[in-house]
Image 1 (cartoon, rainbow, N blue to C red):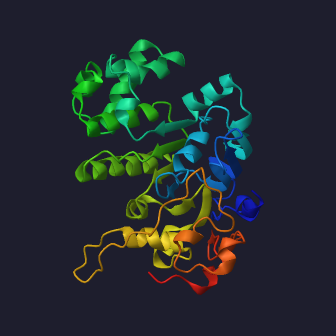
Image 2 (cartoon, rainbow, N blue to C red; image 1 turned 60 degrees about the vertical axis):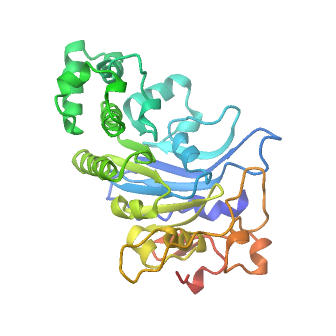
Length: 341
């Protein structure tokens, strides 16, 4: 995993405010399954940073390692996984925490919103029980926990929050239940919120409402937000910076406007051309040829070379070393030349 060492020590993040430490720092994170279960690491030298009040996007196709990266922030890793590097939340390495420390981390400092809200709640229990459980476990009285739950439901746009506490999950639509899950994630006022494709199963209108809620709550509370998605257009709408992941590695990272104006990695450019445009003279979407690299494959050189129209012979032999361009980093042998969309 030596080919990513430069990227793991320099995440491409701009300096934060003086005296303001990042809420999340991932440095050289490698996750590998036990011998014989995969030919390559799930994650290979991943590095990223989230500052307080900042929204950072992590984008890539399905299977690129996005969900494993964000779950590592809570210590949720595949059984038997072997790890290297560090995942620091508020300066403490999650990978070295005990079970009790992880429980405290998840209860107070980091919260996660998953793709499927119905998989996050117990269908047999009332929403009020789901929302107040963590608060009561932390010593909050039942009355105070209930009042706090009503406040949270109101903050995420649930009408009649008191009545909603008495309802069960099946009585909510997918969009409304996702709001409930977001309310639960914010109950302890975490410093970091990890959203793993929270709008994937929702219609476009509901997606916009959920994004607006996350953006507003982040601005009001100063919460750092790690937003995981396969949709670059969505990332562009809400993220301050974006990390692009392919085959378990960060291949490009920079400020969002710079990334969209001039992508330097062919994979980033390919993701952009996949998105449909509404302009009258816009070209039709162009899919990236080929398929993503599976865990059963361990290509030498650049993992994207087999799908890349710009590949050189050295691309299949020599892994590209991430280099700085502007305010970010790109791991491509031809990054100096620029990419034509």
